[in-house]
Length: 241
Length: 289
Ligand SMILES: Nc1ncnc2c1ncn2[C@@H]1O[C@H](COP(=O)(O)OP(=O)(O)O)[C@@H](O)[C@H]1O
Ligand SMILES: [Mg+2]
Image (cartoon, rainbow over all chains, first blue to last red; front, side):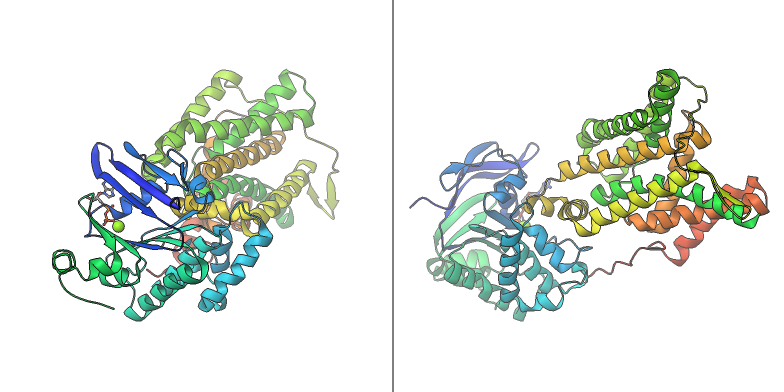
């Protein structure tokens, strides 16, 4: 089976500074790929390159076998790769429902309204707040909105950049439960970037460890979790959530 | 006498409101204050004057040409100047709009001369006399056009997906791109809209105050003040701000002295900003992080 999305030997960075030194990975349908690694390893840079904000200097990015290299971010988004950026980046001055509608910008309105119902089922808390300015919500609600906004467009691949950042453990648990549900009940491919490596590995099918712009370890989530040297080197042996 | 002063204040206020709408549109789509906005109005006036007086073009055709010309200038300003620096900080972009304003002023002086030129009134609408208060025909035109244009803009920004996409792109350009919106396209569209409305406003104003290549400076300042007073980003706020400044100016020159009108209207702006930083019509944005 061809992968939903495949990154092959990707080199990219900012100006003359290369941050990613030949990264390869792939995500299949109905699979969670956890990408873990220390702060500054290049995780966000990788997602931004896949989304088309950064032009790689070498390597290829394939979406179901076709290269999406050089496409504009809006085009890549419409091709079914949806990126929930680090820091959520909701449209703070617009209402919650307007944020969701914009997730389906350029798509058939009937279809968007249908998908919106589904997103409200996933996140019932957003219904009560539908006409409230998005910036007035709590961090957890904003994260749910950011994910909901990406789901409106019925993506094939969802890329989440540190969805647990700055959230209370109980909210993080809720969001992780939802990620699992999206995979199991809806068959989405998910690329999950996390600092919270333990929690991410526990739900991941596959996992990659990124260090200084290189993939230094790859395997199933369970294998990485039971790898004692890896746990000590990258996670400091501590467990959370 | 008092009512007559109020009426002329309203007409002047509508002109300022039109000037403010351009700031509102561009701010809504990019969060940039476009100080070349007054020059769109200046260009609308001199284009119409050039076409009608010199080239003997019928007025309606001249107005359409002024609108189209200013829309084109707006598009070139966005694509040719601002897009090239879109990764710079906002202050640089604002400086670029000021530079572009100076360039447009110079270009207008070269192309149309440094003389004041006149355009006949549009006519068609009557001069209305209510008791001893009269509303000039050109004033009626300006009021009507402002009502239509501001209502249309309010609709676009608060009811249509395109308008919301423009606002989204100004708040979070990257997140907007991740939703399939193209921030460069919405920015260009906003500048085209601001250009056309500026061109229309300048053409409407030309029969009342003559066309002159230096008109853009004061129209820009008044429009900016009106947009800020009303609450940046809100088309109805732009109109309210424009009316307020127009009325205050008119009352000041009618009952105090015309030399004070600018000082009084800008003092009023400062007062508004102290009492209601979000503007008269704006909603305060509460933000949690
Ligand atoms: N906009 C930028 N310009 C220049 N360097 C950047 C930029 N963003 C990130 N970097 C650098 O790229 C490296 C990787 O950053 P990032 O991808 O954000 O890491 P992570 O998401 O894994 O924490 C870091 O060294 C960081 O300083
Ligand atoms: Mg990051």
